[in-house]
Image 1 (tube, helix red, strand yellow):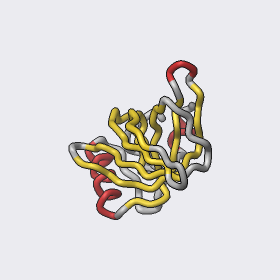
Image 2 (tube, rainbow, N blue to C red; image 1 turned 90 degrees about the vertical axis):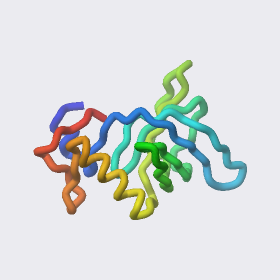
Image 3 (cartoon, rainbow, N blue to C red; image 1 turned 45 degrees about the horizontal axis):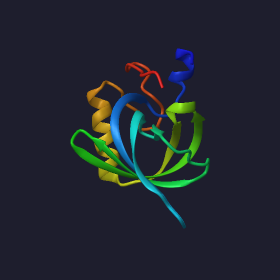
Length: 129
């Protein structure tokens, strides 16, 4: 992805190796731990041993800086990685104010800030996502 495309993202993103408890919502929901890789203010990406269909609603508990961020999410993308499982991309559909502020403070510490308009600060360093 070209740097210009990254700068056009609505929210900054960064590589953040973390653990995420993923729970699918609805009848027959499943729950399991997944390894997170890319974290953003608008969503995240994680690896999963099983596929999760596009459009599936999830509840996520994301371990961040010795705290837990709880977020509602919806699956947007899923890439089959063969024997390595799947990479699942989600957008946050609901997140408590306190949890969002915790994520924003983490991004501020990393030099990745979003302006109040939701557009990325082009003067900040941008992570490849």
